[in-house]
Image (cartoon, rainbow over all chains, first blue to last red; front, side, top):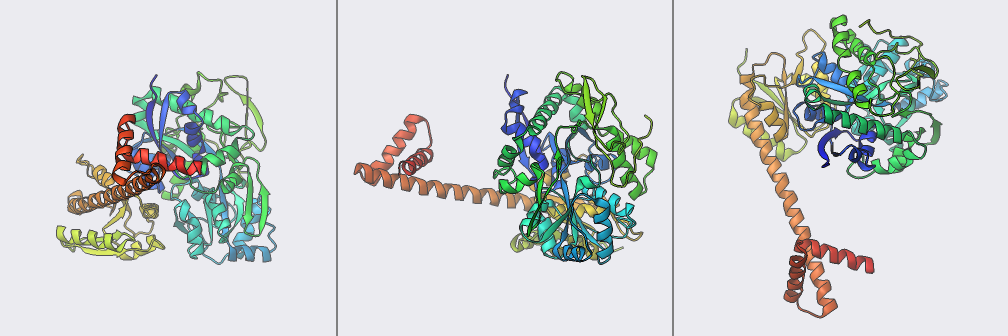
Length: 391
Length: 194
């Protein structure tokens, strides 16, 4: 069988790993796919490459296809998230000046307590706090708004948001344009490495199971090419499973460091993949198990409730009708297509397609199609839960 | 309302920026500003309050413009990526040529078209120049590689330059390869053998 060519857009980030691994480790070839990975310079660019048919699939910020379904940004082409690519994998960093004030205030940089870190940040920051996020529709923005608002600093209203592409985040901090950022790895570590910032929290300290990136396709392509789509979903699932094996992250760091992918030293990429982050240029390592997740706890399952959570946050901010937004958002995360694609494999699939987001503070066994499946933890730092609407 | 649309061109390269401005001036009477520094881009654009923003598709600063789609104040004019709904494929053509346009809410497509046409033509030229430059560089590198291989053969076999080249060409023909590839293989092998 001749491998079918399939072009996929990606941004140079740690969580492009499943796509790069799928190509380099032969998982794509096993499904007779020849992936043509195309690196894009910005999120709007990768979205447009997908919308205008320059690529068939893309590594995408989870909120982008949801925003498109709500008529926010983009070219009006309906997009579908057919799999989650990675859960978490982001960091919040502060400028060195702000880090010094936090230390004077007595903050310990324990890197695991979102409440303590957030309260200290609000106490010492010169208002308005200038925050860098990679894209207006991103989990980075959502996590920052959720976190600060829950701690009494209504965001984005009371802060200044600057959109800065990931690879330019360290430069923006050096130029004094921003006081803090939330960005996907390795770009937080690059800021540390360049001596311009200190890491304050991993994104997962705010939401333990935030769907960070998805595998997005044009909805009409998904309908027209069910066979190719199924092969792509299975390929990415196998790459994610491989990434969860002991020892795989170190090898993955080497693959990702190549010039055509991230073009950065493997040692820096290894930090996120192995969950050992250096938080400041003085050293200081923090161990964060599960910093980024590609497989465990059904990480790549596109929960309709995750899409609805994103849709509700966007609707609340832009004044859209909430029930309509919830319906539109749910349809974007295609748990049905994901299920159909993985049915022939031994993947343990959850029995439901929606869950109460934030309800699990520990790993919990749930009903699945094949034996036992463990989900969670997926809690928010403030203990709130999000109950999706009845279908 | 003023008939003259205001355009902001985001382009760090001075030469390219002035070429774009020239072609826009040829296309009509516009009020044109160039922003060459990506820092504070959203703020600068907000201050200029243009009708159209033109930016290289490849520019990472483009993401900053997406922020303008969410303009919140009552006097703000939300800006969105220009998408032609007439099925002319103008947006598609523009992206292929390497330029994207952001326009304010409510702008009539026919007012944007001449601007897009001019920008597309100009960006196509940039693409051609980039391809030509890459080709020239490659040809130069191949020429250097062939010269080195010839030098090695002349020294190793005591032959003159023409004979060395003839040998390279014959080997290439026998193996169905390009002369430059055979030369590169020879240079690499020689490097490995020390």
